Amino acid sequence: MASIILQVDEEIKAAFEQANPEIQKQLSHIVQLFLRGNLYDKRLTEVMAEISDKAQQRGLTPEILQDILDDDNDQ
Picture 1 (cartoon, one colour):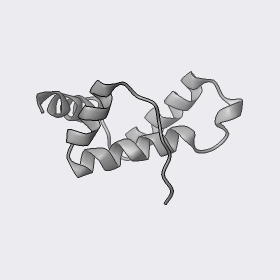
Picture 2: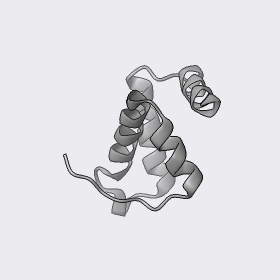
Picture 3: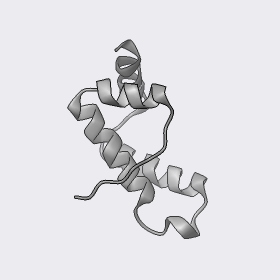
Picture 4: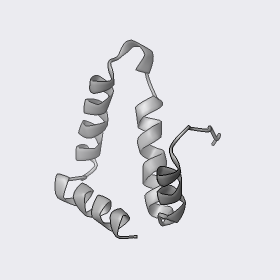
């Protein structure tokens, strides 16, 4: 596994650093899905739709996603 540096604002950085390891792992996986494949030949909306489809195939529902986002906001 390799590392990259992404530019984010301080609030995002702090939220990521405070998130539990499982949330950090999930976010890392989302970024990998976003960047994998033929990103250069696709529009952002197409890549986002693919990520959404893959997440749903793996059992992520809108309710579960909202719970994750709510938990992260509570920290």
